[in-house]
Amino acid sequence: MLMCLGMALAYQGAFHQPEPHHLKVAVVGTTAPDQVLAQTLKDRAGDALDVTTLPDRQSAEQQLHSRDLVGAYVPDAEHPELLIAKANSDTSAMAAEAVFQTVAGHQGVPLTVTDVAPLAAGDPTGQGIFFLLVTISIGSYASVAVLGTAGAALGMRVRALVGLATSLVVSAIGIATAGPVFHIVDHHQVAVWALAWLYSAGIIAIGTGLHAFLKRWTTLTMMALFVMLNFTTSGGIYRPDLQNGFFGALHGFWNGAGFVEGARSILYFDGSAGLGGRVLSLVLWFMVGVAMLVAAGVHERRQQTAASAASTGPTAEAGPDELTEDQLQEDEAVAV
Image (cartoon, rainbow, N blue to C red):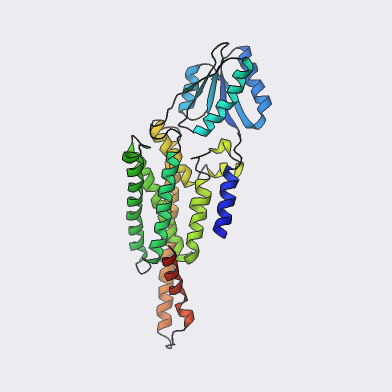
């Protein structure tokens, strides 16, 4: 029931009513009519649009490639043009197109739409990277449940190494299907795979560490962190400019957004446009996982020391309470 409630609140809260929020667009031109058009759009749209003016088409293309703009409108009496970058976000580009289709419609002329950052042939909507994220995420947090039960007898260092190897396999499966099979990632596969491995390793490290403390509540916690709050803030379906403030704020540092936006930068924007910050966020998530593993190792050693001290005392007949934890571990393994 908690999972059902959490999924309903997260997914419906994030996706039920996408509306522009500070959608960054520009009007290209320096003439008085261009300035008037930009100001009129700004006044009528309010917080929905952030409207600026640019001196020329080249400046507009540069800002689209640096992912600082969603759309740039080039006014013309007969053939106005809208420049977009679908690789940045197809849904945001569609929102910008809707705005300027209205502008061109008021002028009574057709609007030409030019995509300056086209998507891969195997991913015409640009959402294939999001589903790669889903694949890797589910493989990673499901592996945590298996490691926590089947690997419970192993030391924390061994579990950490097994988790690292598991993340390698999970990320390899993800890139193998997204690359050669479905052609979502049709170039720079090694770079995207490295990003996927870092992402997966962070999830498995955090989950393995948490399991030492949370036990059977680990699965619910992992779903909250890496499904409910992760998929909804990743930008894979809607970026922050089409979401409310809560989910938009999490997009800035959550690890799913780090993978999705990092992969977009690698594939479509020559490894620039904020890639460094996204890689840093994934490294920080991984370091949190390492810290969790260290804390879990200390916790388990203390438990073992306490158990050894207790075993030297008067021998007591094992009762039902002493079997509770083992039974819970077995039940969790069966559930997985």
